[in-house]
Length: 136
Image (cartoon, rainbow, N blue to C red; front, side, top):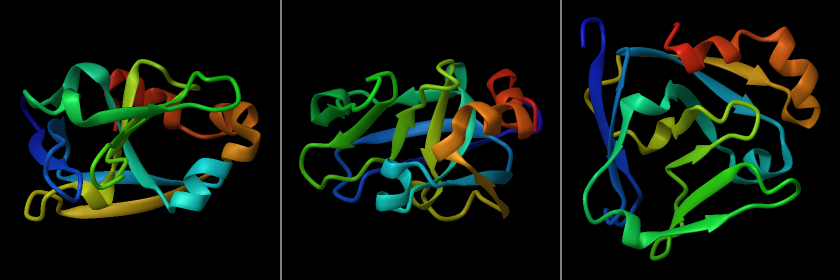
């Protein structure tokens, strides 16, 4: 894909592996919702079609949901790392934990804040919803 790089990554123990097509320079989001704040999760957003879970990884995943049970937090059953998740407010994307990307393909990382405690108003105020369409 033109302008996109294939980033590889996964969990700490290596049982969960994935590839994602995204720019070499990404905007990552620091969210203050109760889950992201506790995990210190900083993530970038890609359309679901650009994310590929590698064969054999699914058997090592466990699902955690809370509240509305719409956000799908997927973490490794062995090491506990949540290297990606499916957000409630933008269900046609995957949120990739930037620190779980293998070294060497990310050129630049810009950090933006997302007010997950007030996600409905933050979604409107930010440009995060454009990312489901692959806009940078």
